[in-house]
Length: 395
Image (cartoon, rainbow, N blue to C red):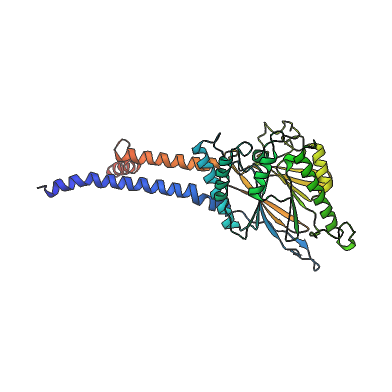
């Protein structure tokens, strides 16, 4: 039989080890909970919808038109089976899913626009790989039925112009039901397949231009509702509002030299000239879009960096940075409060990748220190301080 003293000596190390294991598990769980869930709520909670105010008859400022709450993001680049490493894919898609679902829950947008490059390998993926990518996208960006999700095609979704085909375009449009004109609460949105604005009269390009010309006629008719011409009588009426233009490629600009802000392109890249029809639309295509549609605001993606540009006539364009941490340390999305006559935009930044990595490294350091103290390989700071205090008292 084991004597009580020996029994206590036997169970004391076991109890200490169990206590150490419990502490380590608690720290790991707390860090995972913070970095993978809570941090998204803490960061996105600080974002608020901008207010659209117009002067009222009594001199005060009040909102006259119904306000549409729209969320804009771009360049999610869901990795494919060819170039995507499984760990990188798992990490990036988890981050985007948590950020998107948290934003939906906290901000309650009415419509979400994704401005192209949803997938990374859509331009060459097989039928099975495409189906797998679409299923993952639908899981990540699931949304309630009262929230509308609208998607614009990007070069990684259907291919650059030289690689784009009717098959890839129709495949994309079948999944996302891509429409060129969308109107809600008196606001008109025109969603352009900017890859098809090459201007070389290819079949896809000709069809895209014909659609845009038809939209241009409908928008012109909406401005002539009081004096309807015979040309407009058989057209479905649209709100009397200049449209918001949404596309993947930005309108033509020489470079990002005039862009600034914490999410703009790095200083060493801002002066690199843009290549027409590759980095931005050509001058000719940009002029056509502005002439046909006469938008009041342009939103685009593709560059992975933010930029605010004023085009001829004071037309503002905002390039939206990538939503993926694979492309940026500080992803973000844009929140827009839009009426038929005005709009206000604000940016919502997501958690910094450096913050998450620093938190994990700090937690790992604490785990190592606790383990070393337990095995008496490192003096406990509390024990060291207590010994110093005792020596001071005995003097």
